[in-house]
Amino acid sequence: MKYISTLCVVVVILFSSGCQQSQQASPNSSGVDKKGRLMAAENISLKDELAKTKYEMEKQNKLLAQCKQNAEKMKKQISISEMQLDSLKTSVAGSAKVIADLKKQLAECQNMVEAKDSPALCKYKFEQQKKLLDECEKAKQEIETTCDSNTKFLMDQLPTDLMKEVETLTAENQKLAEKIAELEKSAGKSSQ
Image: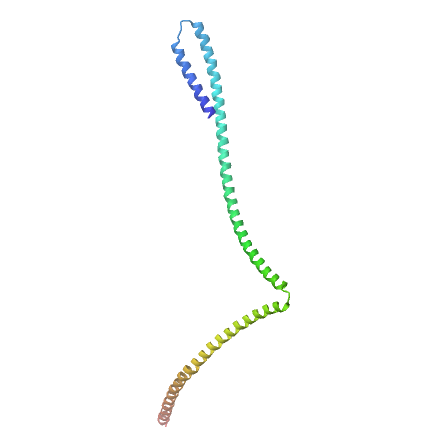
């Protein structure tokens, strides 16, 4: 901004000095020559200053572009870091839950150990075993019920069906035996 404003001031000065020269045309040529030389020297110095300002401005533009690239890199690094942070937070939350569960189990174990009389501990284990035994009994009952119903079905349905098939096959067998006997008789008569 500083360089742009300086550049604008220089352009305005050059423009105004050019206008003043045309207005101040004097008959005095030696004064005009001195003024012309001074103006030329001033123009040269202003051009040098303008070139320096342009160079500085280009330099600043390069720095600005580099800063923008660095800012983009930083944004990417920040987003990666945020994802890693979220992952770590999730991991920490899971670990905290596991730790809380373990603390609860530890407290229960300490309560059992701190119980002065050992029958309390035995009673607790006995109750656990009794629960397991009850569950096993229920499972056994369910299996027996299922087996009984399946056995009853097999005993009721299969013998009836099998007996019908046996009767049908026996009848067919007799018919075939009769046909074989007839064929043998007719084959025996035709061979004589």
